[in-house]
Image (tube, rainbow, N blue to C red; front, side, top):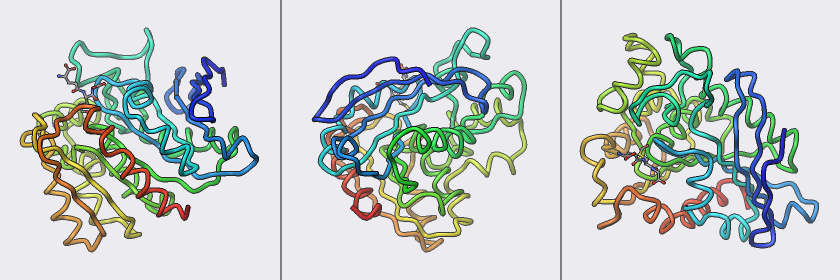
Amino acid sequence: MQLLSSQKMFNGWQQRYRHYSQTNQCDMTFSIYIPFRVTQGYKVPTVYCLAGLTCTDENFTIKAGAQQYAAQLGLVLVMPDTSPRGEDVANDAAYDLGQGAGFYVNATEAPWAKHFQMYDYIVQELPDLIEANFDVTQERSLMGHSMGGHGALVIALRNSERYKSVSAFAPIVNPMDIPWGQKALNAYLGDNQAAWAQYDACHCINHASHRLPILIDQGTADEFYPTQLQPEKLVTAAKVAGCPIQFNLRQDYDHSYYFIASFVETHLTFHAEHLGL
Ligand SMILES: N[C@@H](CCC(=O)N[C@@H](CSC=O)C(=O)NCC(=O)O)C(=O)O
């Protein structure tokens, strides 16, 4: 791992690293917030924060205002990139496919399959790297925004023994049924609907072996709410599946990081409680 930057923040450290990813076959960058408690010699749990379309590891890091709460609660925050990147990595001119739009899937189709293995990267390679190199426990939670909310929900529901809780801001919950999802799943997985279903939270929730707690916040003024997000579909599916879900509709909030910053304390407190802090 190569340290790219390190700044003191709320008595802890905000850092950025680059490392070679065996899973994605290219260099990957992530950001991490390490609270003061770790510098005192304690191991603490980790919350992985997955960002949305067009984002890097820096959007959540810079705009969400999460570090002050992570410092108070004693949580490490890990902000991964949203896709593999580089000149040798496939891309598309559109903002919703290719670099910056990995959709947290393991691509099976050319030209994406060689590098776009973001599901395995987030589930296995990145936690292995974090847990080998930082003073964290193996207790983890996931949160995400929009495409990152989709990633957080799918990964937590499919690997519910690995996570204590999952939360999302304005998540895509039923990608098989909305334009962003149909475009990405078709490109990355071909037209195999069974493969698509493995990356659709409304389907995955029926197979979740543990009933892990879910928190979702959605702004009513979000331009993507009616067409791309529709989180109520997951609320209905969760109730049928018997999964505990808390859904907050937030009046007049939009899709931006101003919305996330307004409720990030609530989400981190939710995770801290389920992580036993
Ligand atoms: N049309 C926009 C779309 C990009 C966008 O809104 N990205 C969101 C996530 S949307 C779902 O995953 C985002 O988080 N943007 C970055 C930010 O810092 O706000 C465009 O013009 O690109």
